[in-house]
Figure 1: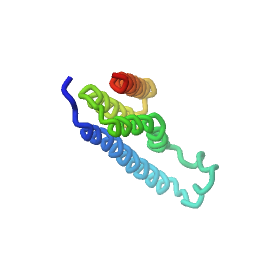
Figure 2: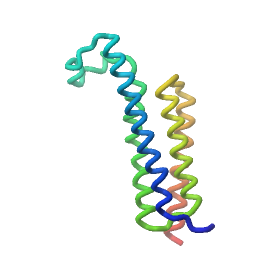
Figure 3: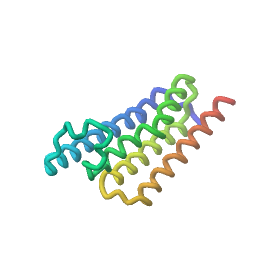
Length: 141
């Protein structure tokens, strides 16, 4: 395979950051709307007992989820860039991960059908593990 400039991997990394920003905006759109409709005083949300006050936690749950498996994605992409051993397959796998995480987020932040969401999550995670295997193979070679 022809070499891929390692800097090209910055684009899917920035794509994940952009997805996180979009989910953050959706989180506050939903949360502020619910607080206004339900007349929830912001101070009521200051402690850990606030979970019962907010009913729509889809975007909040997704935002938290974007700091779980995607953290491994960030580490792997940065390790790939630092090592300078990227190839086209890693770039494709990185974009597949980002695209599937975007699908996962879209599902969770809207109609939230668990099996649809889980499918996107599982496929994204498999893509990340394939990325890891490919990176290990390239590093060893």
